[in-house]
Length: 267
Ligand SMILES: NC(=O)c1ccc[n+]([C@@H]2O[C@H](COP(=O)([O-])OP(=O)(O)OC[C@H]3O[C@@H](n4cnc5c(N)ncnc54)[C@H](OP(=O)(O)O)[C@@H]3O)[C@@H](O)[C@H]2O)c1
Image (cartoon, rainbow, N blue to C red):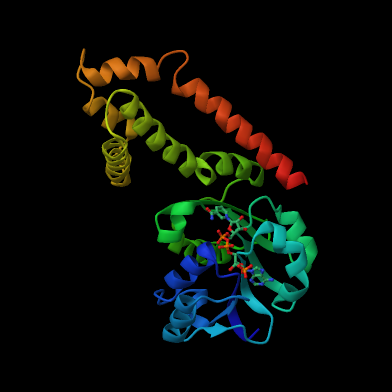
């Protein structure tokens, strides 16, 4: 195997990984990176040139093959991808809903990892949960985690059955938080704020709270710190933490996402 790492699909997620690999002094990316992308953006072409990666070279079996195409495009792409996979390749997929078994069977490999990133990964601020097959060595595992690290935090290895839960919590989770910002702004408008002011207040509140969380503090401790007994926050939280509050609502929402994730994986 002469190329050590190939990325199939350099869109939002794949492109973010490749940009991060360019800055990694060791690991699979340090041995040369090939990028397969049918429609490279000008930014990608420039990044590939600066990093001395190769864009759309002739396929050859690689030690690590990262699949970042859309799941709907996977079947059609399999024939092209096969040229990059040898029996000893480690195939890492970030495709939503494609089980490891399907990837192992498609390419005749035993070393497979499946990861679920989320949208903030495109700017390196995401979180990725992953699982891997039995045949993946601990050395392979360290490489896999290094390859996923440009997307943000990496959590795992997890049981593959839990990937649907990861999908429902962090994969779909950014949309729940965006909805919170929308709903907060809408409540502001209903109570007399103009739409622009409400949007600025809600967006900055969610972003600022996220920045505090990012320091690693416990969310419950942060919440308690801003809740004076008998105060305004306590009044709102008594609704949000009530029997028809956020907990039962999120339980229902997360369950719906898990069910849908299982349906999609089975289709
Ligand atoms: N975005 C998220 O938040 C998120 C979260 C979890 C999981 N994922 C998963 O991450 C994967 C990538 O998502 P994304 O948002 O980065 O999608 P994307 O921006 O559409 O990127 C996919 C890229 O793959 C390219 N491609 C298509 N067919 C190809 C082929 N045969 N060979 C090589 N490249 C090919 C596409 O090119 P064209 O545009 O020319 O088709 C596109 O540039 C998906 O499987 C998705 O399920 C994404």
